[in-house]
Length: 416
Ligand SMILES: [Zn+2]
Image (tube, rainbow, N blue to C red; front, top):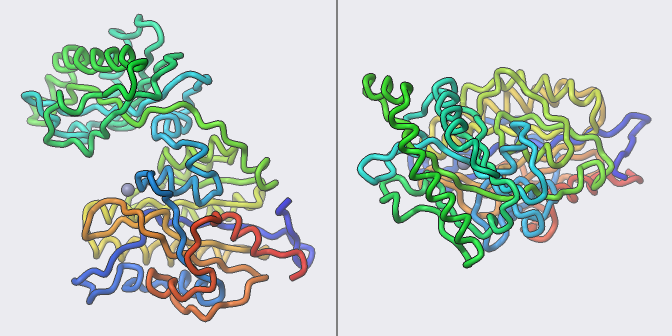
């Protein structure tokens, strides 16, 4: 469908998402945004040679998160495919879900005197956590339809098999409930059919404390003065999204490169090849060159490669403007530049953040994000730099209805 050739060579499509890159002016940067302040010749060259605009990635009524925003960018309407963190991340861990199964992200948290103290249980290690999850499996394993799976660090999974009304359960993300009384933020039923499921979840949460607090892992943590991982916290529940694959939708073989389970999960449901890069961390120390080289290699078998870099979002969450500028500069020089230099085929490239994570706020916002598309068939629109302010003058204007994918793919016309 969108397989196109130019001078006998197959066109390659590249999508680069710098998670949370967009921002507001930062006083310490002379009222520039981190994107404006960063030295990023490669992204600026894409903006200058291509076409620019602002893209709404989070529809009204949706929380601004990478799940919703990235589905939108890829052309999967979030209103139809109802993103939820549980099933997306579970897919990245290879957990199989049937039609009526609901997957919850299940954090190990720290509870003290009835208060939710830490959503990450003192950033417990994976090896300690897996022993705790094993203890939960041993205790609750006999309960029909309720299964625990280990993940990374504090991030685990609780799957409810064939509980028809699990989607009517409202859970509070634990990072939004730090300091709250546990009783006030427990799962709630959105309708009376879900009361039974909610009671099961509440009982499991309360009983988990008995299993976890006396476990040798937590006894050792207490002695070492570390925070206990003494309670589970299920949230982000949902059924698996019934998405058409990327190949069905666009006729393209696609691959995704990301350190983040959520993004790998979207790729899994979209039928993309998931490429793991050993040095990819999701933080500022990620292996940018390793990801660039993996992308170039992925083009041997794929028409479309999606590279996701989490680091700018993390810098936004910790409100570190210097770090955010550095992550953008590293992404530009060590990843984007390296891919563009290494590509042998003609290409069309799109670069954008999924959502802003402004330094001033420390969390995601729903503002439209700047984007740039460079393609052999697109004429430049006069914008010189890639940033929030320059993009306002771009030829695409404010894009609210179309997806980035449709703009990227239609940027290659058969006549050019
Ligand atoms: Zn984030």
